[in-house]
Each structure stands twice: as C-alpha cells, then as structure tokens.
Length: 111
Length: 113
Image 1 (cartoon, rainbow over the protein chains, first blue to last red):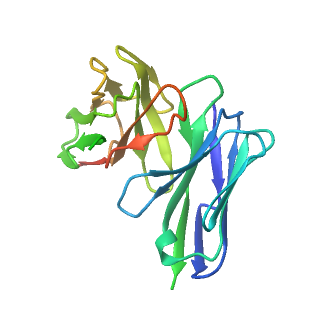
Image 2 (cartoon, each protein chain N blue to C red):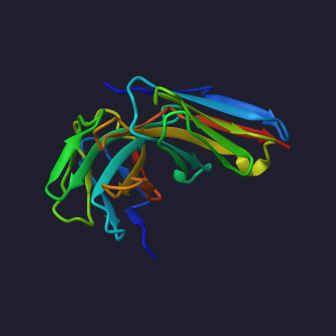
C-alpha cells in the first residue's frame, strides 16, 4: 500500500537556525499538502502544491514539490519559537480520495 | 462559524466496551475521514467516506466501524476487537473537487483503563 515517509522524525534547533523536513511517497500524488500541528492541537493546513517542480513561499517557509510528484520538502529560514510543532506532509494517491500522511517531523526551537 | 465538532474531547472506557466518537461538520463537505494518532506514528487513516451511504477502509480499519447516513455526520465506533484503542482520534472533512484541503476537528482522546 501507499506509504509516506518523513525525515527527520525529530529536530531540535536553536532559534534563528534553519530547518528542513523531507517527505517521500511510495506512489505518485495528485497533490501534496503540508499541515502544522501545535502541541496539544490539531493539524492546520499550511499549503498545497499541485504541479511537478512547484515551489511556493510563505514568509520564512519554502515548500517544494518534486518533479516526479513523489517527494516534497519544507524549509524554514531563521526559525522562531512560534514554529514549534509537528509538520505533516500528505495527500491523495492519484485518482483517489484516500489521503495518506507522513509520519511527521516534530520541531523544537530552543530560545 | 463553519467547522468540525468532535465529541467527547476526552473519553475513558473499560476493556471490552464499545465506544462511539462523534464527528459533525457544517462545512457542506462531501468527504469525511477518521485518523488515529499515536506518539511518533503520525496520522494513520482508519476509514474515509466520499459520499453519503458509502465509505472505504483505510490502512488500520480492523476493530473499528463507521456509518455515513447523513452528509454532516461520520461517527466512529471503537469496538472491543480493537486491541490497543488508547489514542488520539482526529476527524477531518474536505470537498470532493478543487483544492480538497482537509479541515480537522479538535480531536477526541480515548483512554482504555
């Protein structure tokens, strides 16, 4: 079955350092979405990438979708304490509504 | 305000008991989903439904059951057959066209004593 892996599982950074999480799917995705879950909260949508090779930016966050539509990355420049949380990637396998998520990357930012 | 309501927020049950988690949405979304979250294991899909009176098994459906009799509602029953039911359960919904972004509820935390 379809699997989505994320690395690293955990990341501790000093405030101001950069952070990157990588997402790899075993199957081609129609689109990929990124969500953020704050400690004790629920996942909240950040962004969606649809096109092969697409790059999108949200302030300090940069998202990329791979050419084969099977991998993606999220890069945060100059992390802040408000970036703390778990970041999930995921999406529906092509032609389905079966949304599969990655294992998530938990980010801790040390002030 | 439109959104997804999950209840109860916290639930305790004894081994051998069935329990039903409620999920109601007023977003007029066609598709609804149930995920289970355990520490370090991400979000695992239990069941999903694209339309009323239809649903499909996800990756970890054993020991769970669902119904979709109304567009707004997608209750999840955790049966006694689920061997390790203690977890955080998340319900989500989306449209069936366009961006298909998932909107999540606040979650229900089930603890089996």
